[in-house]
Image 1 (cartoon, rainbow, N blue to C red):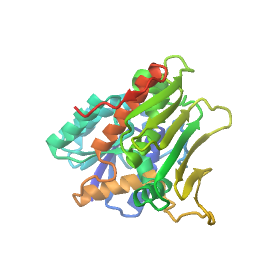
Image 2: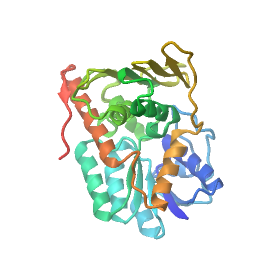
Image 3: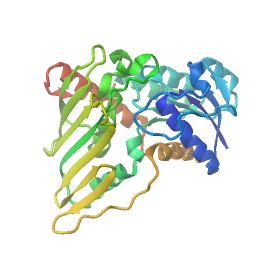
Image 4: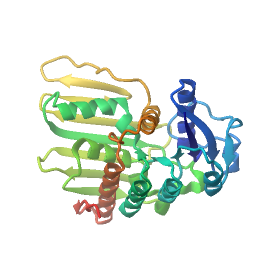
Length: 345
């Protein structure tokens, strides 16, 4: 039985907690034993906002050992196998490296880090300590996106001609001390929210030759709040992605994709995936109904328990996603001038 600790109980941390409750009820080989958050009110069960509904708004953490300091928890919890880090982006690298150096495996929430240098430091720490590191890029485990990956790899509908990826929603005003709307801590919409689609494009097609991005700063100090990127590939397929977290009022949250193949298309919209076949009837492919958050944690547990390599979401690949995102940031700051992706140091 693996013993785990969850570090960070904000909106996404609460989402991870719900998945652990389910996994433990299913006897999936993990026991969540400790929780850590600097905010005492969260340890008392107070909920923070989120653009995704994880169900219960208040949680009872009475059966877990509770900490407000990471160092204290890592020192006291001698039997931990791994930690699940769901902290603000600017703390990812520091917390991950601390845990790895304590001999623990690490599942860290996306984005991997604020820079490629921090990503490389995290990877180096994992290798030095011979421990597993995985970044929770949940779309790689999201059933509808898994179907897309399969169609791309197998050429089910022929080669890809074009693809558009979109996500958008309300401005995230709910974060602890408003860190999400501080560019130096979150990276703005580009690094916090758009990075999901950056990572998906990287997973599906690999690193592009260069990117061209337009962005606008609508909230002072937040970084870009609306962005649009074009990705250049050698075969000239037309790939683009947009993100906008200024869609307030009753908009809520939405993520979509539309990928055109030689013989049809896959379209994911309003929570429904449809395959459209040239000359045939549209249909809904079969796929799991479980959320990506549940499936990514279950996958990581299995990799630790059976000493398997992290193949779906290796840290080297997610580090490439950060390199792409950083190039997009440079392009947006240069009024859309194309930017090449930096190489691995």
